[in-house]
Amino acid sequence: MNHPTPGATAPEAPPGLDPARLRAHLDAVRPGLVRGPLSARLIEGGRSNLTYRVTDGTGQWVVRRPPLGHVLATAHDMGREHRVISALHPTPVPVPRPILLCEDDSVLGAPFYVMEFVAGTPFRTAEQLGGLGPERTRGVVLGLVDTLVELHAVDPAAAGLGDFGRPEGFLERQLRRWGKQLAASRDRELPGIDTLHDRLTRALPPSPAPSVVHGDYRLDNVLVGEDDRIKAILDWEMSTLGDPLTDLGLLVMYSHRLGLADSPVSTTAGAPGHPEPAELIERYAAGSGRDVTHIAWYTAFAWFKLAVILEGIHYRYTLGQTVGAGFDRIGELVPVFIHHGLETLQES
Image (cartoon, rainbow, N blue to C red):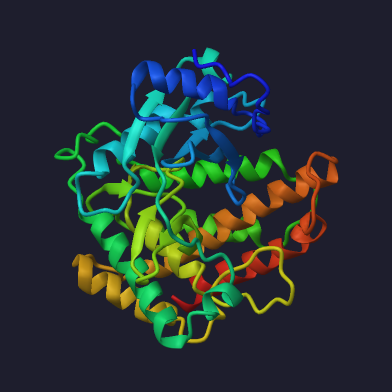
């Protein structure tokens, strides 16, 4: 193990990552990769798993690990995330280069993996994206669609991901899963949400051939380079094999303007130059060759899924389990998402 220079002050370690222990492990399994003491900082913005930027002053890497005090291993499966980016890295799909996977809890207290650091911007708000100007904004969002087409064009079996999920009955399982999630965090009346769930269940579309599905595909889960091209897709924790149009439906949902001032849930749709949902659908259809006749169902399902997620956050807030700015207003958003879901199905 490398020891600090006498009298030197070790950099403050962020919660969940001990730089000295990480350095010792990297020196053991990837000798020569790290050339000096490591420092680390937590990257904000992750939904669940923790992400750190690590450097020795010359090289830079990213470390992903489960949240502190995690219980459900299946919900924070580092091996699964590492496997999908390892499989996709040789393909045209932009993902960070994987460095290593460590499933030994004794190093950092939980399994983790290391990947290369990719420079780029995750655009999280319309204001941030709007700084590019209308023409560049349009190009970035259309590039997001083109990159999704590339992902869904990967042959799962050829990439070594033939057993990465169970595509048969994928939509039925998704509806059951989110229905159970709603029941587990429901302690108030939510007019329309049962109707939305029932209509989605009754109008289940036929799924196209399965593909690798990201599960949370949107602009703030990719890194955009200075040339406005997508450099890496991040946050693969919800990825599986399934119906590719669920990814498109979510992207279309996030491309609608919520029309809410100071909303704690932001989309980039209000940025000048942002393409309308119809154009994104047409571009995906042209690029992928897939039939998008039933995209309204997939978009309505995305509204339902987000309504359930937001209601879960609201429920935990009422129990005092979630603190922070904006959480007190999450509950008032849920009816808005329900309304949009019902309206989308009605229009179809």
